[in-house]
Image (cartoon, rainbow, N blue to C red):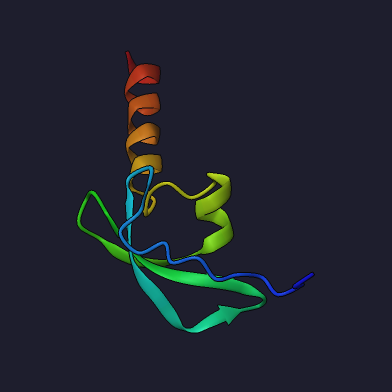
Length: 77
């Protein structure tokens, strides 16, 4: 049995609001593969593959900021 982890090309895939553009060189930092992604808001950033695959990373952070603004508006009303 082959114990090597197969590298899957996520390029072009969508994870929440993020579209995967390409792997980042070096591919692995601290044991985690990293990808260059583009958020629907237009910001490009780098994220860890594990965060994409397990659903903890779905935006560049802009979605969190929008949610926080909604909470503040709700509290002010």
